[in-house]
Length: 261
Length: 219
Image 1 (cartoon, rainbow over the protein chains, first blue to last red):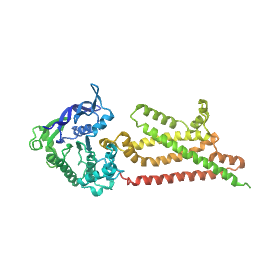
Image 2 (image 1 turned 180 degrees about the horizontal axis):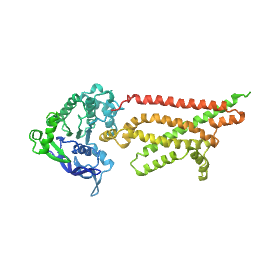
Image 3 (image 1 turned 180 degrees about the vertical axis):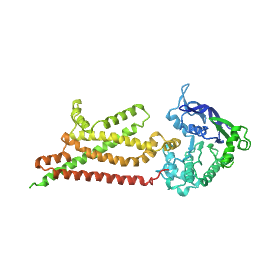
Image 4 (image 1 turned 60 degrees about the vertical axis):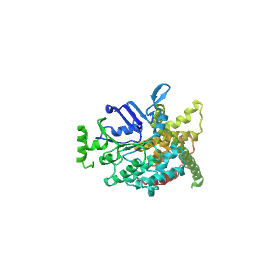
């Protein structure tokens, strides 16, 4: 039985008066491919952003790879994590964003080599060699010297995936990575991710509105609504035979909107 | 008939002083702009407070008063400056306060998403600024920096009031000695204009060079 690589314990997240996550707990097993689905504003993206330390938490605990994410031990006490602790924890986690967030002033190759060279002390030649391997994997090797402005959305996203992979994180977070793409460009990104899921034992968390992809990609699907996990299970259970009414309603709406399941 | 050649060389000497003031003042202003501009974005309250105080004070009081203060009041505190030092200090601090807001605005204009990408890639705060934010913010600052540099050039004229022999001071000397206003003041009018024009040309060149890699497009 593999052990959990992420343990989320009773976390609370508030934005001012708005409570987005209210006592959420969940575990993610090492190597698991997890899909988070649900309506907008249900808190699924917030979970990824919290795991990437882009948002703080208002309460609760998160353990990543056996260590507290937002807390650290000081003697016998557990105190809020400082920047150094966060820096160390972030090495375990990578993220791909909805809007790619590539660096527009750097070419594709430099986008990928920047972080390994700065944060892991990798020599330029080694970083470039590794970057080219990754670009090859995402089918972008011929664009190494292009700048992001010259790429299509799908190409940008494939570069962004390569950039996140270059740091070899144990956990990868994908935040609606195809939502900003033209429909005909979605497939090229999804096929890269499918290959990634099949070839690596990386733990992957995916927030998506592509139900067909979630079905194919995930070992487990979590359905979120209003900051709570309403239903979870294997993809075939959730998509073919949802037990909760809210899940059924959501999936019906998605199908009506023309998404494949 | 007046022999103008001697007076012209007097004015050219003044031009040299003005040039010196402009270059040294701009250098100081640039340093102050980055210190205070980035200081205002600091996560430490005390740094933010210091930067804000500096900016508000120097924007909120007249360059004329600041110059007199630096030159005539500081000596009472035991700090005596030459007219040139006083001029550079007053001009640099004054224009730097305006530049600080330019730096802050440009850094803030680089979207939150770039910063988040840096966090996800585990860059330190310094690395984020140095490798991602500033290279993108710098081209945004240049047009306003150009304005500031020209303002500083024209502001140098106030130093004639503390007996620094700049362009304006020398023109006054020539006027007093010859009784002619038209020639000296037309000459310095043209000289100021040429210098301002040189600044804006240089800045445009720099801007083109810097934005070339960005292709003028952002993702």
